[in-house]
Amino acid sequence: MTDLIIMAGPYRFEGRLETELAPQTCDYFLRQLPYRKKIVHVRWSGEGCWIPLGSEPMTFRAENATSYPAPGQFIFYPGEHSETEILLAYGGVRFAAKVGQLAGNHFLTLTQGLDQLPSLGKLVLWEGAHDISFELK
Image (cartoon, rainbow, N blue to C red; front, side):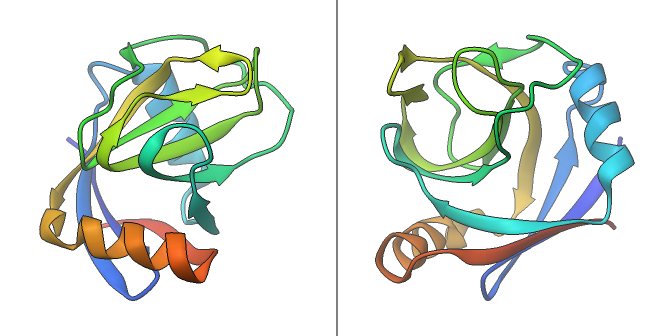
């Protein structure tokens, strides 16, 4: 089991990589650590925040894919029908883009700090992009 510390805006979370369910996605993500980006509010998917990663598709494909991540679950969309991205659900999410419903690889689950998710979501919605970082615990 691989545990991470995630800092998003002023909030601290802990999480675990889903290495058995999404091994290729987790392997790719682990090689990127420490990982620092900006998180913004989703446009079509509901109560979620996302990290836009551009149009270059990843080398891995669907594994442990879902369109309905639960609060505290991160999904990684490796690109194909829309841009590459990572999404964090903080409430109800139906993962979609302007092309319609999509499915992303559930690769990371928060284990601590879940009570802060609604506050993070509102912060990003009303105040815009915030820093997010992922590091090994």
